[in-house]
Amino acid sequence: MELGTRGLSLPPRGDVLTAAGFVVAVNAVGALPAAFVGADTSWIDEPFFFPPTIAFPVVWTILFTLLGVALFRVWRADAGAARTRALALFGVQFALNVAWTPAFFGLRSPGLGLAVIAALWVAIVATMVAFDRVDRRAAALMIPYLAWVSFAAVLNAAIYLGV
Image (cartoon, helix red, strand yellow):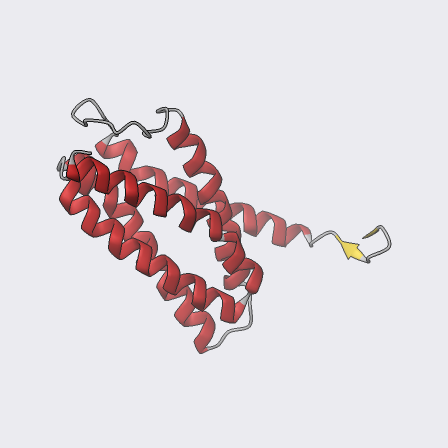
């Protein structure tokens, strides 16, 4: 079915359902650390720019949704070395993302959290470069994620430094 004069068409139903599956899976895996470890901030000396607590689950749900769509776009691209590399890098950066919550909150270690988030930031940039080689829109969908992780790194550093 065409929409408008640009010839935009709705994606096949199977694509929509598969994309939704990616979104649900990324959100579910992304939420696991907080579900198991929690995110108690009572032990943190919060810097003045610490966001309201409600911001975190809202922002992460949006970001994980964008990541799910980006991952789907790369996954459905033609098979090849670039796609394989992009998917592998996504796995690495997502594993680091999942590791941050237990490091920071579970161990109550802002220093370890800072090390994990620094590695995560590098892995996100590498993933974005790899995604761009497969699907430019998938890479663009990761920009808000990189921005938020950059902010989170500054926040983590401020907590670590006691600023």
